[in-house]
Length: 248
Image 1 (cartoon, helix red, strand yellow):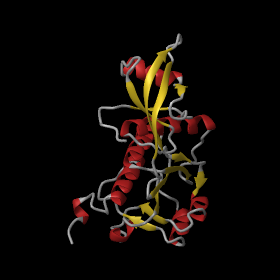
Image 2 (image 1 turned 90 degrees about the horizontal axis):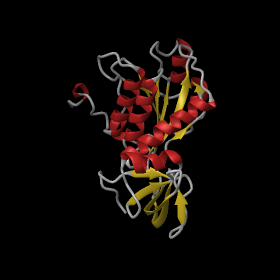
Image 3 (image 1 turned 30 degrees about the vertical axis):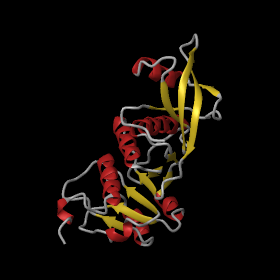
């Protein structure tokens, strides 16, 4: 089962079994009716964000403009072969939304808000819930059926302690580059991006002792969200994002 670029993907947290009916939540129903102008008899695709893709048909429109669908086919897709774990300081406002949206489109599988000495961000359950909604919207736009995990905030020491055997890359000026040929075959990569004020000396010392590999993202000074997206893009394409590093 494949989704064409012109076919929308909708979200239903608990997908019914094949042949059964389910009710879309209000937000998804509005998207179906107002944005896509679909009606009874139209077919659409659904995901639960946990790897299941379903084809369905609209069977009824209820009084509150809620959409009833019947599942025609279910398909479980495997988890991505590679874990792309981004741990980054959190920019303010819409810039955070932009960062999560782009990282999700690129294939990020987990995001951890990084608490740094130069940016002690305050986050609530409401904040984390809003970020999950941003990632969900990006999944629907990019036709992804695995929703990225939004993890609890952690400081640099905690992030390094929990890294296990993952390869750790750090966005950091200094003309350094990892062995990109080996990076592309790693099963799990953690990508660290610090705040606009940079990591503290103590945080950088922790990273030196934890096999963290620095990645120079070029001559320009980047915002947090740009650096996070650039680092992940470089990891995904084997370090060939900038012409500066293309020559051998």
